[in-house]
Image (cartoon, rainbow, N blue to C red):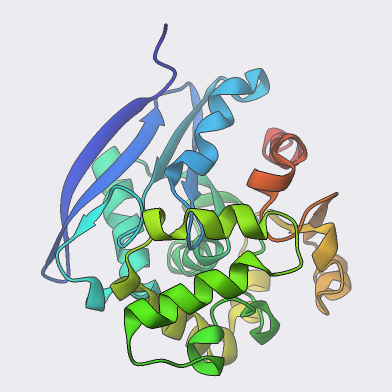
Length: 267
């Protein structure tokens, strides 16, 4: 059996917090694709890139965010979106990646937006898979306010139970693995910063102001998002994924990869 991608662990320090970041990736002849996963997900969400021949020439990098997957963080209380952005910067430096195609989902989409805003000349394209760009996008993260609980384990258990019964594609599948993919003590900082940035961070202006080509991907169950028509008029390509809610990589990965291929391949 051939190895389609390489696994690696990188020791990095973010604001005095040591991390061991677990990553997967490969070399390639075309500009790298950098994937940032969402809350409750891992780098393996994007490992299937190796099964899509139209993307064979692209190098790629995906890694587990601090507090998630196989990445080890010595101080989970320090994790928030700015911390995740600095982690992304460190991983790009370790990989020697200067310019790249950026793909981010949900929490990873917000992290990607802040990264692209800080380094606009380095991002050749941005595929935003239901990443936060408006207050209405906090349907998961705003639970840290709406269902506040000072005990992180108790909050997380209740969050998992609510998510299990959420009436959308892949919600139960997503909920089933949360205990294995996320550390409970990392949730509050991540969710609180997501809500704060969505409400007060000027995310829509940052998103529309990026100079690179932009695609916003969403599931058909979320076609009622109020801003879709407006961002399309302002030059953002829309990609609606059928039979899908917030998680195209779980509900309809074939259509997700096809949309990414058409978008990145046309740049």
